[in-house]
Length: 298
Image (cartoon, rainbow, N blue to C red):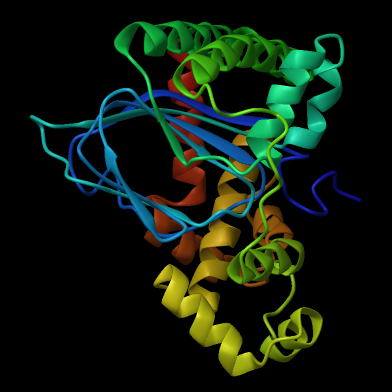
């Protein structure tokens, strides 16, 4: 049995990007989506609009966005050579790392707050604060290519403890009214739909099954999802499968055919076509380029 019977962030412990730069619309196209785990987005340069749970925020340098599990979000940016979109990303599954914070109760409370609390979607920081966080990401970016896969989890754990130690200080200085006593947020109905899809994405999509499990009519499910996200359930499911395929592609040596099966697409040729439509290259080409980029740091 594969370790990736259910592809999620338990299999890929942490995904991160350091100062990725986009200078045209072909390099970044925002869509409404939600996902497992917590995503922390740090914006170094950019102009546009962030939409979270149907509320909009101005994108600007120094903005830090926290996307909690299954929270709908979209980033619409105005990109050009003169105004690029530069961002860093940390995406992790909280349950994997919570025990690493036990020796520091205050830090552990803040770690829990980030994924369980009723939080604002964004936080504005000054240049010095962003540089403090960026330096930790840069260190991980430089070290990761020199590590074997069995060292990843330890390195990611140490990274998160260091990152959250600084992030807590910045958060509290900019949001003094927030505390770990805040109430837990209530999930939106669409979040429940996405959570269901996260569990069932490897299976053929049957609205009657979703309707039964979520106690909502099939018509209401489709209408609600389309109104809130701008896309159909089937389109979102395809995006979910492509996201998981990408994580698998970068985290192991599985064949393209095996990855296709793992994400619930039995026709490998169809999977390759979908992947190329989403990412601009075949799975084999994408993996080859990704490995080549890693070697540049060695």
